[in-house]
Image (cartoon, rainbow, N blue to C red; front, top):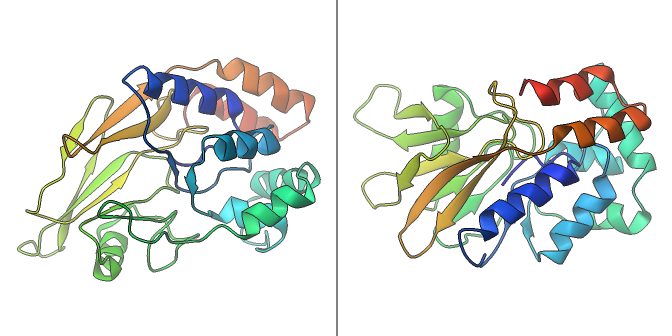
Length: 243
């Protein structure tokens, strides 16, 4: 899963939904664990409780001051500063220690943005996908950052070097040795594909498949907490429309 963005209600709903399919062997969080949302410390505590493999995103870096907020839009910058004030020193130290690229795990590399620019570049074009694949040393990788579910299939016979496909709820990707793949599970805490349901994926290590999942959650609870925290109105409203 990726881009939880301090949305504990969405995170807990996703974990419960995943557990309905059977025991979870592990949790991978692809960055932007905090930022935007109202419960950054609680989300970090939950991920640590799950013993998750966690990667840093740009909002994680901004939340500790390790990255500046000059490139953020005004709402994102306001939320980043609010997040800094609501994390303990232990939380900030934990975030600062997070890697930006994982060591290979089960034939996967895990990164927030791209392997070219791990915490900042959005992988949403053929050019960025190809640049990422040129640096990918494993058969498969997971990325986040765009908040939109996506599959990239390397195809060196094509002039663009790969093909990009949007992913919907229930779509299954088979992991084979026929082509290298890049997968984006979308966003848990702030989807941006027009669907407000939390988005994540289940990697089945036995069947060697990745299945996209969407699940409804009570976003009104998160919105109310955001209002109480006086976070930017647009960040609150967009949860209801998935934009």
